[in-house]
Each structure stands twice: as structure tokens, then as C-alpha cells.
Length: 425
Image (cartoon, rainbow, N blue to C red):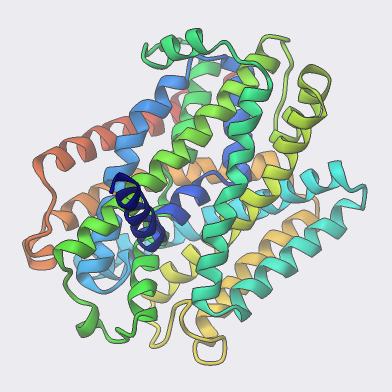
């Protein structure tokens, strides 16, 4: 009987897991992995507690995004456009799209550099290869095929879990440091903390989550807003389970990347700037297996992250300008404007690498823009999630509001810190 219960739960999880799992895994894109690698290599285990505290924050924020999409029947930007002054909605949409585009370029660069470490073909070959493959997948694959492919690609993130055990980390010390918050009042430590927070709680995921919920409803045959509006108790329960597992998975990966780099690179005083630097430095310290897992994991995470970034931009623009036809359930022929925005974002990312835009600077500017956009978007989302006229009985609980407020305070502090320590080492 117990075995039957486990099988039943496993089947339910496989059925329920979708937008939340994909969003959580997409958060660990090549840019995020680079940020976590640098954090571990430069600050040791001192930031592990962030993985603990940001997990409920992410679950609450992404849970709000999922509920807004499910209950309203439209994506987050569509709701923001209705409740906010147009100038504010346009400003937020512009910042998110520009930040996403910088991030796409940096992620493609990360994938290309990682592939080049293993298969020694020219960097630009890999840039064009990944760019064409990812754009073709988004344009030509049916939504259900694309969603299932992205879901299975999340397995690639286990490479970082395995790597942490390959390097023989000191687990008793790690567990102690995880549950003991520490802050170092130095410019470099605080700036790194800002980067970790900015790449963990990032605006593009808010929009991607809500719009994937809408796409799931469309794929189930609810093609009109009227058909999608509202949600059952079971749908909300399933969405929260999906989101909670996705965010826990996302932060576990963050945790293990920091552990790996702190155990090896921080101890050996190795200076790095990217995840590729981390992979190269890992080889003599932890062997070829750690090197290969770390490197190839970057390719898999890019396959997840880049579609989320480009797709998020397309959803934001389509809802901002009220396109008549939009979404991944549509074909390129039926929604040409929507897919044109995806293509433009992908091509911009490819061009950034062709003209040798520095991916480190691209990441920096993406973090700045996300830091600016995150706080007002979080505030607007929290207001929306408490509006009975939009959410009906699915407004935020007091606990959710408390975590949302804590997230806003933390992200506000991160944004202020970003400018306070601008240009300092």
C-alpha cells in the first residue's frame, strides 16, 4: 500500500510539474552560474545562507506570478498594463526587455565558451550554432513539445549537485555556515551579494512564470480569456506545488555551485570572472570529472535559460502593445509579431558576440537594469495579488504578504547597495 502511495504521488508530481519547475531551472542560466561561481570563489561559504532565505522568497514571488496568470487568464504584464499608469508600465517593460537582451547575449557567450572548452571549434561557430538551434526550437516546435523538452533539460542541473560531491566538500562546516548568516562590510563582498540576489530573484522569471501558466491553459483548450479566468482549488494547489519544487530545485543548484567553488577555488585563492574560468580552475584541483560536469552543465542550463529570456521579452512586449495573437501555443504564421520579437532578441544576443561585446559588461548592465526594475515590479505584483477585484478569493495570505514585504526590503537594499558601491572594488 505504501509503495502504491509513492507511485501515485510520483505520477501526480510528473503531471503537475511544469511552469514552476521550468522557471526555477531557468533561473540557473549560464549568467547565474557565473555569478554563483564567483561568489563561491571569492567569498567562500559566507553566502550559503542566502540560498536558505531566498528559497521562501522565490516561492512566494513566483507563486504570486502563477496565481495572477491562472486567475486573470492573462500574463503579468497584461495585468500591470491595466492597473498601472501607462508611463510606468512602458518603463518597466522597456527595462525588462533590454536587461533580457543583454542576458541572452551573455548566456549564448557562456554556452559557446563552455562548448569550446570541450570541443575545440571556433567560438563564433558555437555562438551561431546555439543561436540557430534555440531560435528554431522556439519558432518551430509545438508548445507541448517545447515545454516537455525544457522540463527534461532540467536534469542537466544535477551536474552541479554531483560536482559538489566529487570535490569532497567539508559538509559539517558547510551545514553550520548555511544556518549562520554572516555579512562582511566590504565593498567587494556586498557587491557580490547584490549580484547573487539580482540573479536569483530576477524580473524576467515573474513574467515567464505567469505566461507559462496561461500557455498551459491554452494548450488544454481554453483559448479565450473568459474560459481561462478563475481557478479551482486543485489548480492553485498544483501550481503552488510546482512552484515550490521549482524554486527549491533552483536554490539547491545555487547552493551546490557555491559549495563547489568555495571548496576548491576559494581555498586555493584562484581568481575567476566567469563559470568557464571556474571550470578551467577546477580541472587541476578536482579532476577531469568535475571539469566536464561543470562545463557541460553550462550548455544544458543555457538551453533552458535563453528561451525563458527571449520568451519573457516577447510576452512582455506582446501584452504591453496588446497584440491580437500571441504566445507559444500560436504558430509563427498566426502570431508573426510575437515571434519576430523572440527572433530579434535572439539575433541581438548573437550580434553582441559577433561584434565582441564583453559578456562580463553585459552581465553587469543586465544586473543593474534588473536591480532597478525588480523593486517596483515586486511592489506592483504584491498590490495586484491583494486586489479582490482581480484575484477573487485567491488574494495573498498574511504570511505571503510578510515574505513579499521582506523580499521587497531585501531587494531595495540590494539596489541601493549596488549604487552605493558603484565603481568600488
